Image 1 (cartoon, protein in one colour):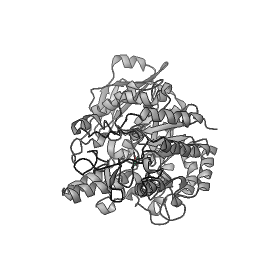
Image 2 (image 1 turned 30 degrees about the vertical axis):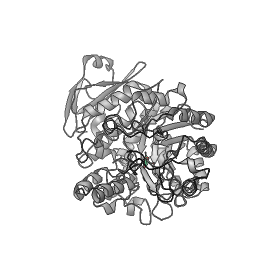
Image 3 (image 1 turned 90 degrees about the horizontal axis):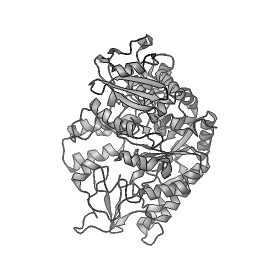
Length: 558
Ligand code: BGC
């Protein structure tokens, strides 16, 4: 029933953060009936598949990425019946549904971990990674978790350390244990048997670790990513096994979230001959604005940085080799307009311009809920008490409480980067709390909801929303945008990011002015020749419907 099932690369995927999408019962927390009530909206947007962030039972310390029961729905989101109805209603509208699959860790409240911790002879003992102290009595090695502290926590009861790449409340699973792997495959089949269309797999290239646990060489760590932690020794064996035993038995696609990967890694993970994953999604482009050049100084990214990332993903990977998602924002990053555009003077223009980039590059686009409205970072995040997400809270704790860093300096960084920016309630209309809930929202709405909301934008033909609808329509009707060759042009330009997309006899031109100033350009004669009969298809200013001279011109800000 789903048109894009076979041509899965042509999907346009919409990320729903269930906690913040739509609340149906006034408890201030989004839920599955809320999502169902908005499916017509999503269908009208034109997206072909929905990705739900985790909705499984969880103490919610990392908002669902810490699971206590993979087989049941978090009660505040609804029931299994609600889920089944959601799936049916999504399919009725000819869209697909993919679930978030968290394989690297569970919650420390998961019955497996409880058994593993309390009984060294339990069959679950070896589902997690336990080690005695290192020679100095400290952690077994020097690995650090993403939250800044050691990746090992000492457990009094066991007199041993357990490993966790994230929070200490998220112990890592031991994928070297075949029983654990079978348990996970069984769980995946449970969801696939319900008829879902695939998985987004969380942090998947972390599941195999070098269990000799060598110390990280910190210099290598910086240049090379995490050589022992990511892309570990058995990662491809486990993915091939998972594919053989699970994925290949269903008509689905899989998107593996990975950081620290090279072009070769993408090919290794997704080349069809290797039978592992369908595509890789990597936060590399979405974190351009946050390169940790210096702990506290935001590095101003340049178009050269963007071109470099694109050269890597666009030029060297693609049909018929590996495949990847176009991933410029998600629930872990600040809002798109803040990273790449101007959320104040040029919110509308820059949101449309970035949307144009997202929909005209090679790959499979992912839209974070609210990006289709040009939602922005929340200016109301002032003090640490305003923050709900654990990474920023843990970072604050390490830097301010443990290391005694200047609080204001740390808050400046948190205000810029906090994941809460991406998680404020979806802005439906101008009523209280953006129409998200009739109660008190778990996270306050961005105060700009009175101007920036779905209802307002529905009636404005020039809104960001209606521009996204056109972009999606164009992309769906023109496979060149999914598969066509990418050729960067005007590569010395300091304001314009420009490229051609080439496919059979077609040439498409995309010109994006990433600056607040007008930008003049003039094309290379060879490119002009290819574009001889070109016509303008879409532009992000009202007047862009006028015929323009493509050879040279002046692009307005953004
Ligand atoms: C998810 C995060 C989550 C982490 C741990 C990530 O890559 O996107 O939201 O905190 O994995 O599960």
